[in-house]
Image (tube, rainbow, N blue to C red; front, side, top):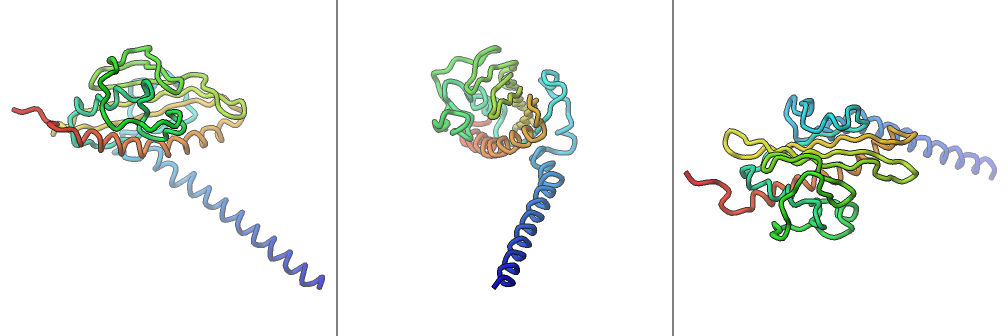
Length: 219
């Protein structure tokens, strides 16, 4: 009987060791192979390395991502969806439980909002830092509280570029700095949340913009 118990104990120990080894391998694959691709998802060669407006605000970030998507609509059609997000519970088109107090983001263009302006507050503790109507929205938050006593600064840039065919290339850059003794862990956690946010957001911005009638100017 004792021998059988020892055998079972050794088998359990072996299984636990194998699971830990597998988990460690998955973490390594994520960190060195999957994560670098997720951080620049949608970008073309060189886009993630470009110097963009707002980069100077957080000169030495602990986390940075750049994403991009082509939208089959001109910038002037995409811009209203960018201009209204994060204002008066419009939502950010994704992760509403965290970003919009659990209220679903709107899927229509609001007519009751004034034009965005620099220093205007936004939902989630953000404020508008800079903008060029029809072209660029830069917003961010500073000393935003996180669990376990940590805090972070973050900026978001939404840059609309007109392609040769008149359609839109949308670039989104997020830069941040974690104030935490566990800086790397903090950055990885924030990155994970961001990935859950940015991909559905870009998908919806593309769908909403492309659904608008009369996208192209005549003549």
